[in-house]
Each structure stands twice: as structure tokens, then as C-alpha cells.
Amino acid sequence: MKHFLWQAPTWLGALIYLGGVFAALVALLLQATPSDWGLSLTQSYLWRLIQFSFTQALLSALLSIVLAIPVISALYHNQFLGRRWLLNLFAVSIVVPTIVAILGIVIVYGRQGWFTSLFGFHFPLYGLGGILLAHVFFNLPLVVRLGLQVYGLIPDGQWRLATQLGLNRWQAFRVIEWPYLRRSLPGTFLLVFLLCFSSFAVVLSLGGGPKSSTLEVAIYQALRFEFDLSKASFLALLQVSICLALGGFVFRYIQPLQQDASLYRGAPQLRRRKRDFVVDLGSLMLAAVWIVPPFVAVLTPIWSAEFLVALASPGLWQATLVSLQVAIPSGLLSLMMALSLVSLARGFLYLGCSRVMRYLEQSANLVLMLPGLVLATGLFLLLRHTGGGINNAYWVVVWVNAVMALPFVVRAIAPAMLQQQQRYGHLYEQYAILGWIRFKLEWSAIRKALAQGLAYAVLLSLGDLGVVALFGSQGLETLPLYLYRLIGSYRVEQGSSVAVVLVLLCVALFFLITRCVGGRDVTN
Image 1 (cartoon, rainbow, N blue to C red):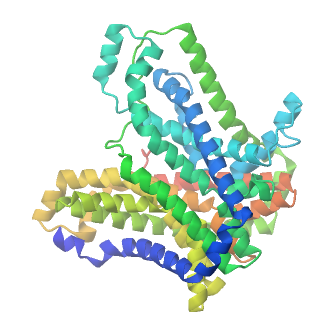
Image 2: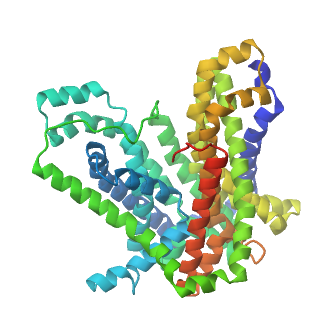
Image 3: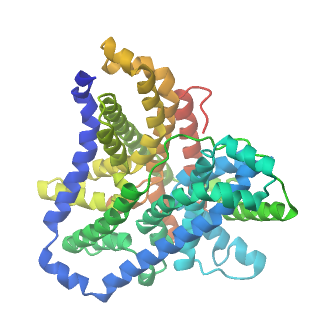
């Protein structure tokens, strides 16, 4: 294993990841002028940005947590027709392209949307209300799935004892469920807060003006419209400082779950009351009404004549080709970096360096504290100083998308690879089985995890709008950027057709990757 640690391929992916992050941060530090920082900090506009960024992230995280808790309990305690379908829909909503979900929300809650037509009441979509609506759409399913994993860690003996004592649902929640949830909720809350604090596409599309702008959008405007590099660097460093402070609290004080729990575990038999049934039904209906309509709204244009007209547009297929040229290399690069980090982690675990192993695992989560737009800004400044500039925008987009998907890929592949290390690591070391030979021996056991990680990375890159919006031009226009421009020019019907194509492309790629790489029996 010592020889394995010093093999160049093992370190290559980690160096590409950590070296790129370090270079981006150094470029930001070199560009920023400290003499302007004091002046910037005295501007009321900056403090309004910070205040709104904190406010919308705090409210989004609170709403997501509060609404998710009864949904988690209802899904865990009830087995019903459509439960697995609802859980799979929650999984899809986590990785669905952001701009597609935004379009669905606009169709449902916009001025001429379904909500207005049905109730005769216009929901104020553009502003804080729309941002909260979209953030809960994305983060409620995430909190539910994380919460169900926490429930899966509750020992069966506690449920058997609760059944013998005749506890009802509320008593069981207070005595058994809440202590487990209470330990995990701070980390979940801060994770959702960080995701919302660094949100870009949602705020850019639904912000409605300067009053509802965030630091992330201000960085984009400083580079894209003002080309004020010093201002963009200052805002990026300010955002990084805030996110690192919050993220450091997460990884310093919140203990991660140590085992993988099933989302489909059977429900315990507790004493049920009519009140419990009403609360469960109401919670599940609220979650379904919040999540399902935007998906339905996006898919309705497939039956219209406008869909066929949109398919004949050359711009659509050019954007599709560019999206594939970005998403597939980005997914492969993300998988390579994840394999490198996890391989190093299990190598140090074998040597007894468990602390180094944990640091390597947690390094993948570093990007949760470094927004993609910040990394892209730093790399753009670095390339500009070296003479590359906008000509290397493609590689910047590929690398940043790969890095932003890294936490999801590591989470997907780490359990399977660490399990192989625990079972057969000593045999591999004893017989000096290293490198490609070891990978081939482990392939059948880890291929499903690799397929899931690769699929997540490709889909997340395919739906990215933030980084490509910064560098987007006629030569680098992906489907999300093409869709955003259609919506911005009020061509919503044509945009809906493009959204259908993007969703179908995501489904097709997910199916192909999981079947071709993971085998026939791979599941979501």
C-alpha cells in the first residue's frame, strides 16, 4: 500500500482538484486591492447585498427544515402505493437542471400561471417570495432524503420497545425520533444555508431587481457587465470568507453519519390515531403539491405543435452538442478526481492514518464553501494574467463543473470503495496487487457506485447555468443558457419545448450511464 500511495495516477486527480482551487484563490488575492476594501465596506449597497443574502438563505433553510420534518416521519411510518415513486421524484428534483425547475415554477406561479388561473390570486413570484419558493423546491427533497437516512440509523430494538409500551406516533417522535433528528439537523440546516447563500441561477432569474440581489449575482454583474476585476475579486473573497466560516463550523462541530441507511426500510407498527393519519396525509399532500406541478408544467409542451417547431431550430441542436461537449468530459474529470481522493483516503486508512483519511474525504466538501462562480472568477483572472483569457473558457467551465459535482460523486463511490478496502485490503497488500490490476478485480463490486457517481456528475454539469453564464458566448452556449435567453426574451413557449429536450436528455444520459457502466440491475 505504501507503493500504491506513491504512484503518480493516485495523486493526479487530487492535484488537479486541489491545485486548481488553490490557484483560483491566489489569483483572487493578487487581483484584489486592499486599499479599496475599506471603501467598499462602507458602501450601503454592499451591506444590503450581505443582508439579503443572509436573509433569503436563513428563511430558505428554515422553511425547508420545518416543512421536511413531518414529511420525513410520514414517509417512514407509512407504506403506500406511490411511496417509492415519490422518493425517486425527490431524488430527481435534487439534480434536475435549475433553469428547468425555474421555468416550471414560472408556468405554475407566474402572472398568467396555473395558480393565478385556478385561485384568481397573483403570487408575487419575482422577489424574495419566488426565491424562497424555488429554494424550498430544491432543498425540501434533499432534507427529506437526509432525514430518512437518519431514521434508518435508529435501532430496531427501540421500535420494538415502543410497540410493547403502546406508544403513539407523537410519543415515539418525542422519545425516539427527535433525539436522532436533533443531532443531524444543525449540519443539515447549515448545508442548506450554504447552498442557498451561494445560489445563483434562482436569484438571477427570480430576484426581480437590485433589491433582491446576492453576492453571487453581484460578482457576475461586476465581471459580465462592468468588467470591474477589483470589485469582482473583493466580492468573491468576501463570499469565500463567509462560506468558509460557516462551513468550518459544520465540519468542526457536526459529526457525519457513519453508516449508509436505506430509504426504503419497513415502517414500525405503532399505535395509530386518526389525528396521525390526518397529519401524515396533509404533510405528504403539501410536499407533492410543492414538487409535482413544476415537473408536470415543464412536460406539457410535448403535446403541442410548438414543440415540433422548436425541434427544427438549429440553435437547439447546436446548444445540445455544446452541452454534451461540456457535460461528458466534466463528468469523467469529476469521477477521476473522486477516485483519486477516495483511493488516497483508503490508502492512508490502511496505514492507520485515520485523521488524514477524514481530511481527504472532507476535502471534497470544500467546494460547498467555494461557490462555482468564485472559482470561475479566480481561474479567469489567472488565465488573463497568463495570456489565456477567454480562449480557455471551455476548460474553465469543464473544470468548475467537475469540481462542483465532486461532493456528490465522492458520496456515491466512497462507501463501496472503503468496503472493498476493509474486506480485501490486506490481501491486495500481501500479493502486491496494485493499480489497474486491482481496479479490474474490484470492478464488479464498485461499478454500480461508479455509474451513479458519473451519472450525477454528468447531469449536474448538463444543468449548470452559473459558470457558463459568465463565459457564455455564441461559441459556448449550452442548453441551460439557451433556455435562459429564451425566457429572458419572453419566448416562454419555445423555452418550454427546450426544457422538455433538456429533461429528456438528462433521462437518456442517466439511463445510458447507469446501464452501460453500472449494469442492468443498478437502481437510483
